[in-house]
Image 1 (tube, helix red, strand yellow):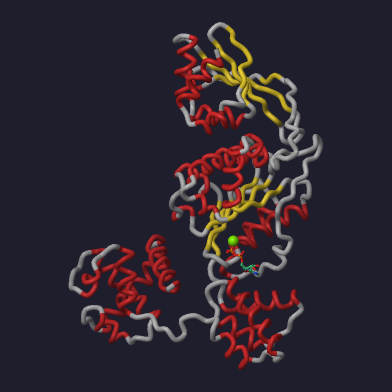
Image 2 (cartoon, rainbow, N blue to C red):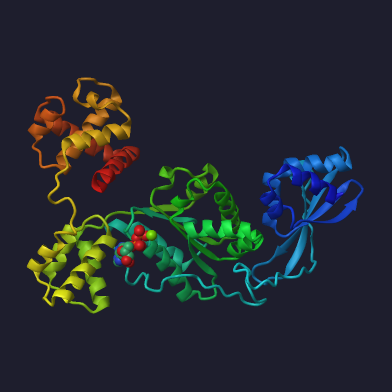
Length: 468
Ligand code: ADP
Ligand code: MG
């Protein structure tokens, strides 16, 4: 019967899907009108029920009549002991009640050593956590910009899965320390609780592994591997955007881990509510625990970061130089470090001591936009493009809400990003006087404080402005 079913299913779904989801399934029993099939994991069962229940139901009824039913025999590998046993679950699509029985039946373990997702050994599992040892709490400088994220991370590191910060989502712009902090959590856990299974994986790598395991027919091992972890650190989850199938898989893994009290740590370039291209159900999970952002560090913190870095590299520089570099580079810690490295490299090449003057002359190339002034015209163009309003409206007398908003943001940006006076800003934006400009700036500042969405708008535009 099952073979006949498979024939029908094969003709109705893509070959790759058939290979992945139906070839590993075996028929074990036919009792009356109940067909029992064996699937390699709970995940497989969930997946079949989620994606293929319609076609399964139809074909089973086709061959077993209207009363035909399907039950699953699931091979469950307990991650702690790796002792497999099977359990029975009926197909929900047939409306049957779940039988909560588990029958211990030994099943051969996958012996394929070429497959990277098979966890070897029957006793204690060992997995390389893929962590960079250099990212620790010790060398992660605390500042106002990262206080919440850091302390939540520290709490999680000392009690993985045991806090309400699950998942812990760390978000912020590039180069501000998300990867460092996320890996520091992993390293701290390995230091104190060395038998915990920790895995760090970038979202991109995870997506690639998923594609590979589909190709190699190792999807079950892939999922089992991640579901066996105590702690999963996934970096840059915004890269899930548009990858629906991988999100689907991660959704299952996430649920499994979360239900078993395992710790999930995520990083992203945006807050969960601002992430686009992710499925709603996955996003809603991301919002379950704590989302903590990392902001641009203030001058004092930037200097502390530089000093710590120099100290660990055994380099000494005058404070004035450190302060100068930290003042000039104010958008990313990565760039800050980059500037320092290039400064050191150049001084070695030219065999010159680094003093303030040398720093000044060398960093000139590094600091962007010092000569190129941003024009008000350009700001106007960016803002109008962003809000999709006609450019000429900004200078007009129109009082429509979105036009007023675009006008006020334009003025605010002009005040902060050009050297133009309030008077000339007012003039440019439709011949208004300087008090209108002051009022606009005040309004925008107030809204940034109180309206998160509005703040995101302004930050987005500012990013574009800086990128140009
Ligand atoms: P992101 O993942 O947010 O893009 P990274 O974690 O890769 O940023 O950080 C970029 C660089 O800045 C790394 O070398 C990191 O060690 C350093 N860094 C960022 N924040 C801090 C901090 N608070 N203290 C020390 N180093 C930091
Ligand atoms: Mg990163």
